[in-house]
Structures are given as structure tokens and as C-alpha cells.
Length: 273
Image 1 (cartoon, rainbow, N blue to C red):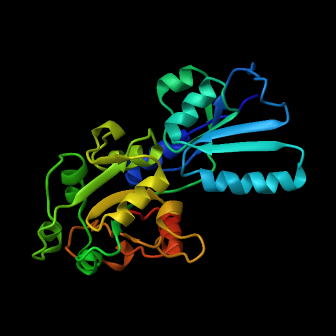
Image 2 (cartoon, rainbow, N blue to C red):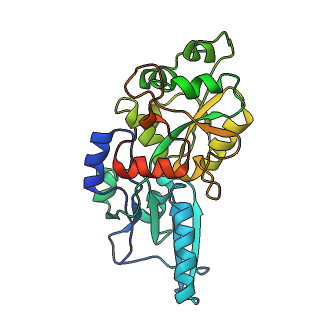
């Protein structure tokens, strides 16, 4: 049996309630019994592709699996949830990593899902932004994110921070079909990735790098690309934008997420955003 998956139905329901949160969910493979073999693919090789969000976890799982089964080779490649779906459905891989809900047409083609992880997407800003301190104090309201990514409205950093900074906000998004973009778009009014405006960049690491290189950039990343695995702090060159959920113009304690542990606690408790 080939395995593949995306978010479980209960995950979809929770997404609808929590809006911004999404459940990285899973490994997904084809429901068909037959599988295509290629000359270059041995029977003791497991092929996996898909979501960047799941990639770090899958690499770790593969390492642990190989300790017990060293004769099994596991090939893992990241390329976005869309690629994971397509590769699994076409039998190019055994497992597809998906960080969004499976679409009805994908399920009809034989896809089934296994939820494995709970994750979230975080808005990011360059740590050298001149208005960083003001943004960390005030946060940014959801309506501003909608203006930037959905309405394509041109705003300056001063417009949202209350400063005199006239530099325009440079909006970035993902070019690859991915769960992070779908989740972010869903949070911004039940939209889809195709509705997101901005400079399109490939991959989670690519989007993070783009923001690190642009002092006036704004983007979004999955947990493991927004926070450093070793320090638990935001990745060097990035900061996490607090979402002003209650719209009171300041960052309350529950809205302040500046470490990986706080982020994981907030996600697990269902209070983010």
C-alpha cells in the first residue's frame, strides 16, 4: 500500500475555527495498489517529496528509521505541497508531504491522508527594519495584512507604525504551490494562494532569505523556518511580527511570540493567532 496524505478532516474543521493555524498533516500517497518502478529505483528505496514544512521532521524520522533499518534508503526532497501531491498521484514517489487540505479531485484520484504534525505560519519582518521596535510594540492588524497581500494596496512602514518612515512595504509570497501560502491566504479571508499579491519566491528557505535581504520586506514562514532550531529565537535576520488580534493597537502578552517555545505552546493551546 502506498501512503500519502494532507490535513485530516478534523484538522480542516480546526482550521476553520482557528483560521490562521494549520495542521501540517501529512504524508500522503496513492490509494492504488500498483506502483511504477524505474530502473534507477531499487525496491529497498522509499521516495518522499513535498512540503517544506514537513521536510525537517521527515529528515529526522528517516535518520531514526535508518538506525533500525540501515539497508533501507530514503530519498527525501522538498518542493512544496503541490509537488508532493502531484508526485504521489503520478507514482513518482511513495510518500507525498502535504501541508494543506487535500482537494476533492485529489481524493477522487486515490489520495488518502495521515495527519502527523501540528504547525502554523508566522508573518516575518527584516530584523534591521528601522521601525522594528514600533512594530513589535504595536503589532499589525489582520486588516493591514489583507490590504497588503489581497488588495495589493501600497503602504509605507510609517503608515502602520505611526512613524515618519516613507519607505514602501515590499510584500513577498511563495511561487511554489504550498500549504504555507494556502494557510496564509485562508487566514486573510478564506482566500487561496492564487489571490496573494507580492514578489513570488520559491520555497520556505527562499522566502526567509528574501526578507533577510530586504530591510523593508514582509513575508511569512512555517515554524521551522521562522525560528532557529538551536537557539529557539527567530532566525538571524528575521523577526516575528506580532498579530494585533484584538485590534487595541498594542501587543498584549498572549500576542507576543518571540521564541520557538512560546510559538509551540500557543499553537498547541489553540490560541495562535
